[in-house]
Image 1 (cartoon, helix red, strand yellow):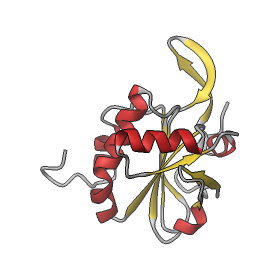
Image 2 (image 1 turned 30 degrees about the vertical axis):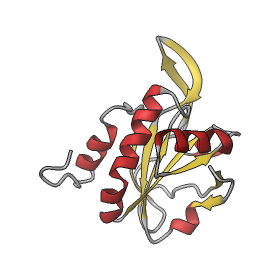
Image 3 (image 1 turned 90 degrees about the horizontal axis):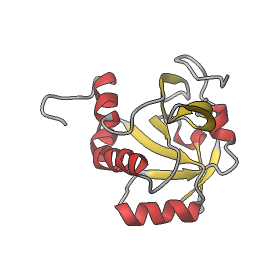
Image 4 (image 1 turned 45 degrees about the vertical axis):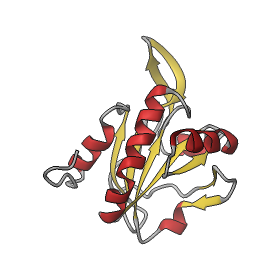
Length: 161
């Protein structure tokens, strides 16, 4: 069973390459709240829906003090194509060895079409300014997740979608 992060846990630090090949470290984002979301594969329907939702909400999330980072096992080149194809504005990070996915509880056994398989568990973890997990959701749905996340974080101001 994969260890899942819970509120109060220290967020495991990481340094991963973004879609341009530049390194991005969680510790460099200290002092800001960070939404780290994990998704299985760039340019698939559910992952595209989720990435577009986060991109569409990025300005509002930043206005509420949050940064957003998406992590998948895709290569930086695949992430660059994903960003270009869909006009994504969020940071996309590559974890081809799945070490970060595993450390954050976002890789392991899951059900896929009724079968138990090893894979990326669609997950979202919110890290506070001190690097501590404040919220963690696993096995989230791609569609509608950002709106639910905003509600759960108390960010849904009347009229926001």
